[in-house]
Image (cartoon, rainbow, N blue to C red; front, side, top):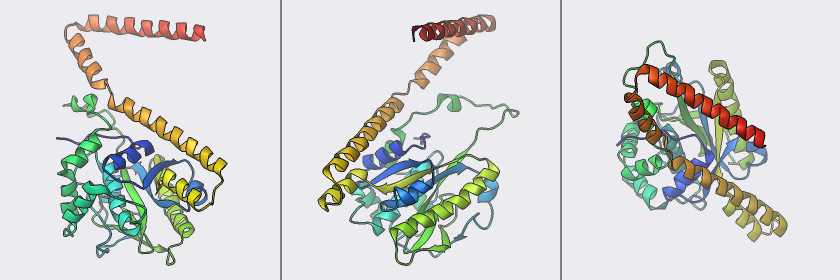
Length: 323
């Protein structure tokens, strides 16, 4: 069974890890890096960076930032990407399975991932760990529950050589482990250590500053190559954090209720969007269109396209007049 492509979306990643049994973490889309140091500094666990894949960069002997750490600690979980369409989920798993050891009181993996960690704990080979992920029916089923196979891609057996290829994007994550910033990229031979970004006292604000510094450099590189990238922060579950602030008396009842309402509204919005994605009817529509087209001549098909375009324009005009 194949792995479907899922979108880079904070709501999807949050629900994905919950469906895997994880509690204590949440994801947030970042529009400006200042958010990491201002709004999330006290609860930040790491960041996932989405960028346009460049094969030449990944084929070099050294990474574009930092250096490979082939003797990385056993407490750091790292698996290679051995399957297509799962780089986002792999980045999430590499990050969570490493973070859970640094934040055992805040991040609970649940039975599925805890058993997976126990099973792979004796594996030092990162490719073998990647194969273990690809062979996990439960992880794959949860991953695939957020999308359906793309019929337009699967049906293209012969692509036009003159047609420009679609952009291919990749995920890498940044976390702190034993006071040093690490980058976990499943297409690399080993974790990447950023020895210049050290946080010996493990200060939360310093960690946020180090992540910001690393991301700023990576964004500059992305701007020179494609200009397309995005950042998703991994942070403590907002409801857990608000409840801890309330228990400590560090937040007023008014602020607690206001922020709680905002969080619940956001989660409700995420739930609706995920529900729409899971009810994707593109495949059905595509197959029906193929069946209809097969029974027509080229002239009849062209005439139907013209009529459909006119009907669409008429509906749009009617809609605009009604506003």
